[in-house]
Amino acid sequence: MNWVNESTIQEFILLGFSDRPWLEFPLFVIFLISYIVTIFGNLTIILVSRLDSKLHTPMYFFLTNLSLLDLCYTTCTVPQMLVNLCSNRKVISYGGCVAQLFIFLALGATECLLLAVMSLDRFVAICRPLHYSVLMHQRLCLQLAAASWITGFGNSVWLSTLTLQLPLCDPYVIDHFLCEVPALLKLSCVDTTANEAELFLVSVLFHLIPLTLILTSYAFIVQAVLRIQSAEGRQKAFGTCGSHLIVVSLFYGTATSMYLQPPSPSSKDRGKMVSLFYGIIAPMLNPLIYTLRSKEVKEAFKRLAARVFLIKR
Image (cartoon, rainbow, N blue to C red):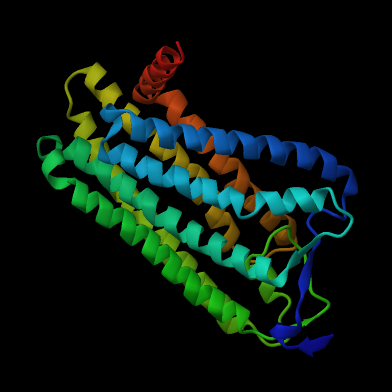
């Protein structure tokens, strides 16, 4: 292997699932359908939440941020994957790899924080209902959302810089279908123990700490709900949190298995499948989970569709 300066690198080869060529066409169909559903579902939530005044609440403001994040998440990876699945040369340019690495890291960290912020909103709504409008005012919501995005992108600048400073060895073959930190570390010509330790530390900070905050919030929420006398009131309270809990379980379950489990002989394929799930499948499921479980979203969508129909007439 040759130690080469990054300035001479033109492109990387993404192996993806090229060792299983019979999988490529089914995967292309699945990814294409998932991408279309993701774009349509998340755009629908953004438009309905912004155009319907009854959804101008903190919960739907944060949900709009989550939908925007999911749109960016899939767009930074899926188009390149679709191109490679149809091509004999499965490559990505050096600049494209850097951009993909930076955006993927930034959005992953931002989603961890945003889900924690959403749990805080649910805690205030259920445990402090009389003070909800005072505590969760517009300025605070904007600050919390901005802090999530800025912290996520700041973390990405740091991790991306540390990773891209490593000298890489020829051939530039990434045994993955996207540019992630663990995959790029395997191309380095030097010892990456320090980088792996830093990645693990960041994973703990951005996964376990927000998850602890989420679980703590829901522990108080459960206590508050159990004190509600009527069964209908308890069901309504749990209903407002159910969608968020499902999304949290999907995201943290897969992300934790990716970054916080020790390496194993099957970790290579496990990493690919987990990345597929939280990078493609989860963003597609999130809008479905919220729309199918939320009566408010379904009613807002009906009102918006009725308005569009009347305008056309």
